[in-house]
Length: 407
Ligand code: C5P
Image (cartoon, rainbow, N blue to C red):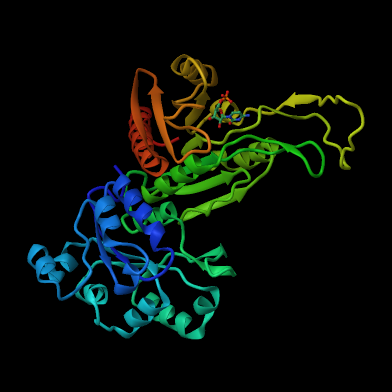
């Protein structure tokens, strides 16, 4: 289950180029189990046709307060009551201003006044409009009234400028929205997670690394936090935003990751090793940039510490969960790894196959423990992470109940 399972999400789309991303957002919300109804402002219709959102949401799109057909099907007051949350993405400077004023001059703003559901805004606009004192004052006013503001992010803008004002990516918005509906499966539990690749220096400018995006580990951290856990995420070099409520420790090399984990492992109840840790590092990284000389060159490599095995081998280990990314004989390799490393649970996934794995948005997992197992996915990593956290919470509870209390 994810926090958005069965939730009714009213998605308001306003006039901005980021409206095209909201079609993907609808898909992601539905992936997370939400029922989505879309309300468009007139400005939004200039960018995307209602039919697009109708197709992706599977529900009729609402565009006007004065549409007798729409009102007959589900009137605006009914729609306002139906919503468990109202998400406006993209939220233009104009709709932010109108909401701050409490105006009800179209369907979307009327719904916002008529609902008791939480209001979440994902602003998207030119960076100067965002920074303008009028916009900032409007945002502050909405925050005072308990609206949640997700973003905006920084980066290239459609107007050719660079700065704050980009709408957050759909998956970031789904995670931010899910944070409004916290679970309790891991309340009081401290969870330590590794994520992403590591970088092993060759010289000051080059390194050995891998294709791990960190998405699965970050999604797990977000899901564990939403399930009520206190989460620390030890992250290799990735370009992902820190999930809400998660403490993040950035590292680069396997040795740094090992150190960061060992410093914190005694204070955790559950350890999930999701990082793609380099098995080897360069024996002696060069202090200066290596110049090309001969036709061939050799690099001497030495083994890195196995973080997961070291955690599992501690005298009082936490509940340990490992990952196994395999290109062949997945189950056999994973089972062997679980036993060899002494893990409580292992989650195996294929790499180099369409059902997911490295550097992809979807994934599928074969999760096993002593005497049992479950297949999860294929589905979006965010949803998969929530399901895996449920399984971990369940097994962890059974283990601690058996052992007579947490480690
Ligand atoms: O043995 P293998 O590298 O395939 O095991 C994968 C699992 O072990 C993953 O959970 C990974 O995070 C963890 N691991 C680790 N430290 C290493 C190598 C792998 O924690 N040096």
